[in-house]
Length: 169
Image (cartoon, rainbow, N blue to C red):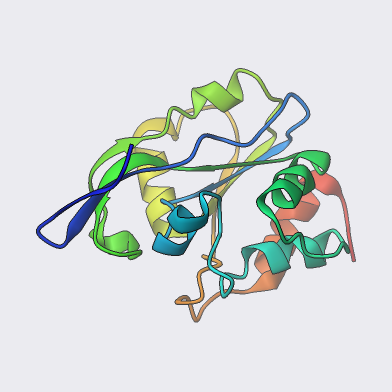
């Protein structure tokens, strides 16, 4: 469905989840940025630290295309989705997300053996907690990989991923 603009806000739809039965960790963002929506895939802003962080963690070249990114996460047991499936949003700012429909996380939890959920930023965390804090899977607030977040720290992501995949020092 195309985005519809009203009063500075755009009504937009998110992406379907990326996962398979081998996925062990679910990484939830808040909602796709304008740049991600342009390329129709997660973390499409080249300044976002997400793909570099995962590439560094797994000691692998950074994937370039959507197909490479999808294969990269699936081969490593990583599932991707956003906490919000659709919303009205002004630009890419999480604070502007209103009138949202939360993702149906059980779609992933019913089909994959998710051991841990990592919430990429405060908005993803708060939306997740509204409906899923009792989901039975440990979940963690992570520093947003957004280029707008000055408090991002790779070490926090590494420690959380080590809890699933073992040490990748």
